[in-house]
Length: 232
Image (cartoon, rainbow, N blue to C red):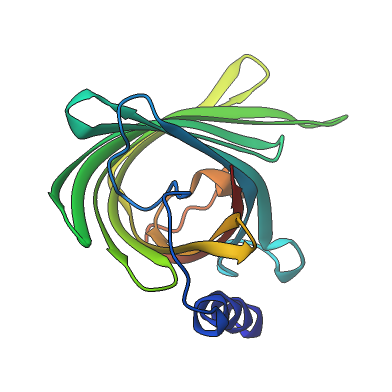
């Protein structure tokens, strides 16, 4: 809990201490429409805290490397792609987004489709799993004097299949398996080098990175996720 509060404090500190600057569109998570075929890339790290109800305190932190891509399509539609990996758990996502309001404040609708897979091969354990996730979402954004703020609300529909070598151990399909709220700040950290700092609160019955826990708890648990990315 102390670590969660410290990370949230650091998140807000970046926006409070920064000076007023002239912003430009070196952003990727803010939901503005790009000109056709313009694109941005970001890479960074995310850390998720797993609830103690399903894991031990010593192993309740899950780091992953992130790569995000956004490109403008005709009719002001955005295509977004994302790769998350820590070798054991991996996910590839593609989303389409369309704004319904685009002024200083922005409001958009989107749908994200993901394929995830995980594996763990040791001497006596040979497990793998995969599944699909569908996330319809609504996203809003606002341009402040010294940073961009984005907020996203998501719903999750998920499937999962688990194998031991070639033998299937189980499968599941869960509508409304998670709800999440995410907010991200994008701003220059120094000179022209832009960064994104985000917090995502996942209230989930199923969270793909926790597939190895094999939890039977059928209730929504909190998986806070913290992200830091460099934008190119």
